[in-house]
Length: 287
Image 1 (cartoon, rainbow, N blue to C red):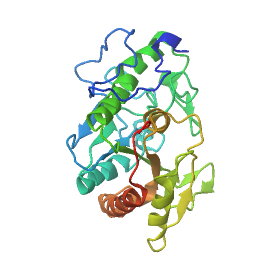
Image 2 (cartoon, rainbow, N blue to C red):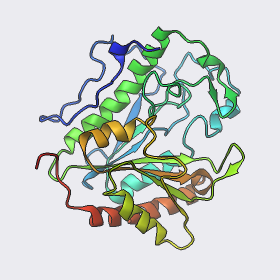
Image 3 (cartoon, rainbow, N blue to C red):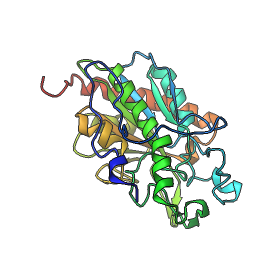
């Protein structure tokens, strides 16, 4: 269990000066190795779209010194390691929409950026029936290190980008994910899912926009649900700040090629533009 003092238990808020809120100011400085990738990537930081894209599970990379976490290398190409196709779609979407995007740079098997630290799915010992040896019985200090060096910097980057974009109306948040076509023997029929909780400002017009594409089956809070408390990103960066937010889930067999990613990025760009037009104006809380 990660010590409570090191958990970002409270959501970061907009800063008047647009500075990053440090969610772990009482933890020692990161000690990532020179060979490690950075914990996040920001693309099109100055994009003028007025909304932010995030991709929590963009990469299947692991830090130097951890090998493959004891897994066969082929396992790291599977959906349990990252959201297949999501990064490709996010990059294309950022260009199409002129929107900034923040992408994670670490496999969800190392630490899941979209799970609360300390949650059983934060650092999994078993994922989709696959045992992860490098995550078995790890000490609290190692859990805290992964949080400090990888989880916190990514979410600080999201907060910083939102602060930079602070305006009235405020930015909206679109979290881009992907889902495996089959899980536990169930064939998922949806092409795209729209996840939300109480805020339907973007979700409803987005669902309508996706349903307008011929043959597209849309999951309304499917295959996952925005009501699931395990999710971290939209609750902390969206709901807690009362900014419009939504998760978009794409089925991986539709976007696991560049052609598929390009086609779906085009559909998503059109759907997002339509949803924003239908949803605005929205205001900052208290206005």
